[in-house]
Length: 267
Image (cartoon, rainbow, N blue to C red):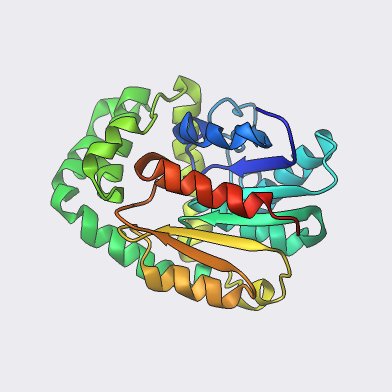
């Protein structure tokens, strides 16, 4: 979408697709050439084997590099949301020379994973029984996209400052992608939340202009965002007020102003 300096946007999840970022993040295309894509096994990128040998953080990093080369971008700005920001950091560590700027939206570094998971568990506790009932339903077991969308709606209501914002979150899932995406999530969550690699030392070496965006009501604790900003030298941390995990929905005007100011600066 759009014209200008190239920006590759990495969606969250794992297991979701680019759809939930739209139409909100399409606003970046007013001044930039913006590329959205579905990660391997997600959305419309389902032509693959879904197993632990194919679905890895490293293979996802290589997909970004393949995309950059295929589009003939010499240097690119990487914008990662949530899990996409974690993936963006892995890419930045491996291919720092290929990045012009880095934006980490509502992202948590590996060193703060435990704090994040504790906050998620605390917030979603009121719906624990409903979660279990839904996951035990035949529709969910059969990977019905409507059941999976209901799971996400139940989950993400706790990710907003104002739960009414959930109605603006696009959860129109591709039927095949919804099913394979859940398998992708199960595989990658082991790497992210259980066997994660602490990137602290590698992130300290980055010399890429970096913007970190959080919300004051985000499920990711402020301390986690602050720790990440402290580790990535020279990075800028912005915390939006009255905002949860989806700033392009809850604070679209302020979010876009912050993004355009950062992306518009020459590095």
